Length: 368
Image 1 (cartoon, rainbow, N blue to C red):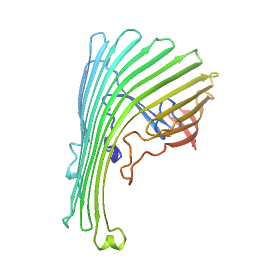
Image 2: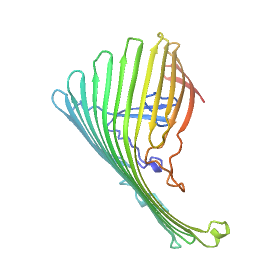
Image 3: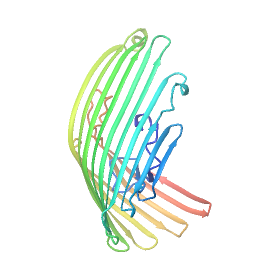
Image 4: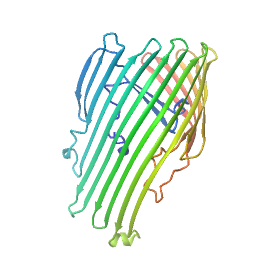
């Protein structure tokens, strides 16, 4: 929550998350669109005993409920969480800052037969942050940031329990971001208002096939329809002796309206081969295209692992990562907001892992 404020609260609800995979450096080809790292968060299974959990700490309070039928073929999970309720003016000496977040998550699962299972997911979230300061000289600083989002997705999983696994996903999302600010002091009168509404609708497909004990292929594709409606208004007036002395006395007003929709798509393939018990390598490529960027992006990646023995492992990775702006990621601070060319990073990592004893291990990385 509050991503514009360095994720003031965690977006991970620990009562429903089963595991988090974190990839940095050269990450697998099935992930794309970012340069630095990937966090893959998976929710816990609903096929467990009936549970009802209520908990609270300084930042969050949550309620989680799980249930399933007698043969565990169907189940559901519901979790509601509130954050920031205990943060008030007593924690801040100079400013009154009030952050509050809400999120709700619902998941239903069905075991269709021995090979097929399905699930439906709904995630709703809301953030609101208010900052207000009244100065002794009758100055005023007032800012509000609001975010709301609704995400819905349906999944179908296929597993023939021999050599093939596939995942199909339909997803839809809607977000609203709003920022309002006011500043009034002896040298400045300024106001800003920004509204961004975004919609996403897409299809994702991934499959892994184990051709034999030493060779497997993972491939997939994603197609997304995206739209963004953005409105921004700014009014700035710097005046007085100090702004005039340093050449910043000016008046400025702007209004920006933007409406855009388009398609984005990606395709990836990765092959994994075990040469023997000591050597394993992955080689793959990812292709991405966004209509509003109009530039094809190819990202080849290579990972090699050498298991010298049970205690010692060497890893080498080389790859390219590319990052484009989402359709609603225009930089409204720019005089004329426009999409930038994709950022690109070529990354190389050499890693050494050594288990020294049952209580101590060593890990070293060379990163370029």
